[in-house]
Length: 314
Image 1 (tube, helix red, strand yellow):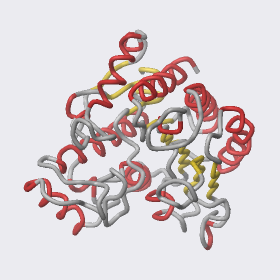
Image 2 (cartoon, rainbow, N blue to C red; image 1 turned 120 degrees about the vertical axis):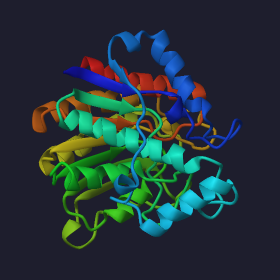
Image 3 (cartoon, rainbow, N blue to C red; image 1 turned 90 degrees about the vertical axis):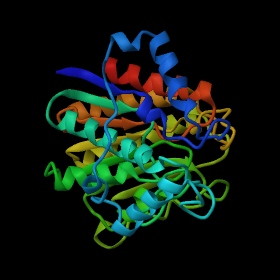
């Protein structure tokens, strides 16, 4: 069994909105170049991307929305939301590959082919079941949670997110689900898209207090993150999940052009290390990390390589 598997390949890189766009296809290559420079390709196993079937996408998304993406994908015209997520020819195949690759990572960990896995172009946490949002066409995080339940028979899942943006597509679609332990560090919604994730939002009904939103002030750095981390670790351990998902967006690092947080890549490495150790302790090591956002290419390379290194060394 490989300790860590990383999924990379041109098919995954195609998920992007053109060169010069903050979410461009060059994000994948920025990571891969640094990944190889550090020799990480010699320390982990590498697998190619996989395209999801319609059936897999429909574990989370509605049939009407899936069909709309297919139509827009053929014409490349218009937007899939209110103006953040433009269509392009082939967008369906690109987005389906993000979903399929995240599901391949989950399957690999569930079947014992790897202890942990990382998918760089993944963690599209804004998409809702019926619409795109914030550069996210299909929500591979949401599909993974549904697949863990419906395909693998896993009931209790933990989702941890350190992207600068609140993962509204995961939070609101599972807000009433008591079996999803959810913890999200994000820039305070009063200052950043999507404007949600207040500390008072802790879940609804029987899911009350199964969700932890931690809004961070602009310019918050490593020390504040570390100070607040222990409550998250205690929260996840108490929830006793059978699988942990990590969305480790690099846009929470200092110098991102779209956000105002001030972390270094040490936060990403620290989070991956602690969750790897926690997964070993409570759920047979099962951990899949998804790259998430990040619009400064150097930050992407640093943060995601720190995650892979931590997962390999933990």
